[in-house]
Image (tube, rainbow, N blue to C red):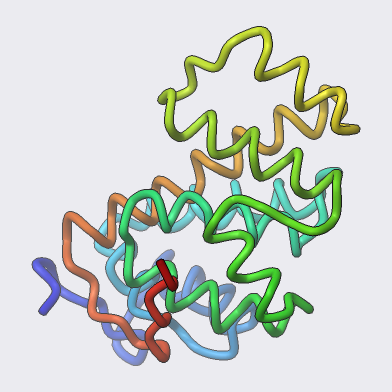
Length: 180
């Protein structure tokens, strides 16, 4: 059970109501994570603005989802894993790509370089080495992509930490555990 109130979209007013309308349009409903964020409209607004901005960047939606899957797996965020597995298929991810995102690998060489870089960013808490950056660039990533990969990790961590700390009730089908 969530540790904070889930704001009810049917009774929301003002800025919160406006933000819920944006969420409703984007997701076809208001997931529990948005209802938790709405306790602070500033947080929900910031999340939506950051997500929208990254959606206009150079990375594909599929890669954004895979990066967030890698972050969510590393943070054991059941909520985000369930949500991203459900949403990812709608964004064109195959089951293999979802599993690869969670594991930090891909059959596509450039995506593999991106996910391996992300795993290093997560493991090293951002303190990656010159060699890590060089390896990512040798894998075909440019500076804009590297910046957006790190930003996507940060966005993923926001929802991971929020859901883990406040125990957001999962309102998506659960993600199956990864095979050993």
